[in-house]
Image (tube, rainbow, N blue to C red):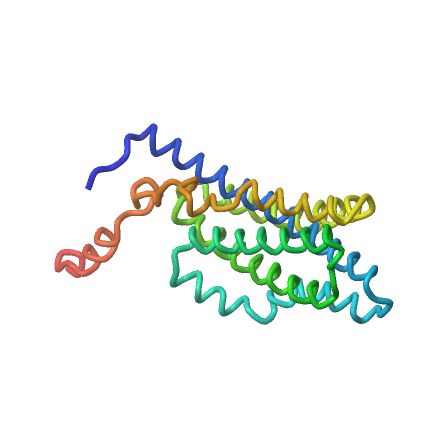
Length: 224
């Protein structure tokens, strides 16, 4: 099997790492915006604190109820396609909410439908991107790549996203949803569309092929 030129392999490694981190930053920032924006939108639709809190709960409940099942799905499926599909779902939901706001048709049931869809898509996308790292980044850069991705998830999703969401919602709901849709649209299908260009070979990843690890241990010379 032909292997890539060393310079091409290095470029692929750097591109893969950059794309994965960029995808994580953009989409988690939009998820963080949704975490504060959807409950704030619910405040204008109901006077019940419980119903408002329920909208926020729908965005995070998927991590508790579906993360194990999503892990199995990610393990058995094409992770690039899963990440792209999850992002397209979030884009479609954001555009649907934006359309409802523009048409003055936003309702509490619609928010309760959008919340689980965004939350589940977040679980799928983050799990798929995390599982892509070992197959697309060389072993000596795994620590760096994982640290960047984990940091991006935390900062964008938990800190920057909600802060930006609160500011944008104060200006207008349409601006908030439009910004979220823009963030999802900026990286709509990158993991599947070839931005993560290819899986690196075991040699490029710094891992010996499976035969080199198994057969020496099974040879008579190694047992002698």
